[in-house]
Amino acid sequence: MRTVPLDTLLKRILENLDEMIIPSLPTPFLRTQAIAVFSLLNNVAPRLEDRCDLVGVENRETRALLCQLQEALRRDQTLTALPQAHSLHISIVGWLGAGPWASLAEENKHLKQALSETIKATYDMEKEAPSQTLADVHRLIRTFLRAQLDRDLALYRPTRSGRMLRGT
Image 1 (cartoon, rainbow, N blue to C red):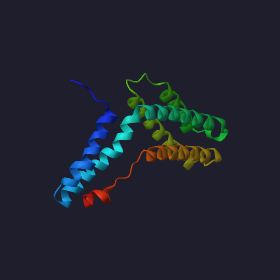
Image 2 (cartoon, rainbow, N blue to C red):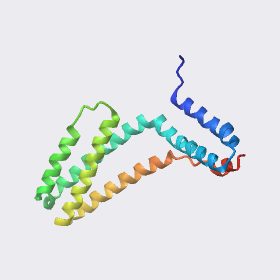
Image 3 (tube, rainbow, N blue to C red):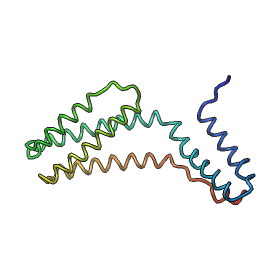
Image 4 (cartoon, one colour):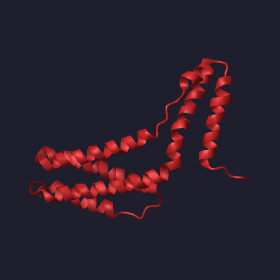
């Protein structure tokens, strides 16, 4: 049996849905359901095509962010006196040293959990000892998350649902 690359397979499915299946469906309800499938596949396709590369980039960027956060917290004398800061430092060292991972996805899940716990810990520390360093740390985190969101949104492909609903 001949194998077809995933991107080619998805492209052919999308073309068939768009050019043959959706226009031939007899009711608006059926066209709407098919358009939903088209839209889903249309937006999943680029994520599948480049996902491995994107996950690797995301993992490297998350590791770099955790290192930056760790360094920023370590430089602030007020924060280093807090037990939560010491605990967070030990946790970050553990998260960064963990592995090896069976897959990039497994590492990504681990790093996202580490970042989530880091965010929670920094907000808890801010309640106890507000500082400019924590404000800077939160700004770094927001910038990082915004860049991730922008990268994900760049993959979004709007559908041509108006044309599809009319069956043209």
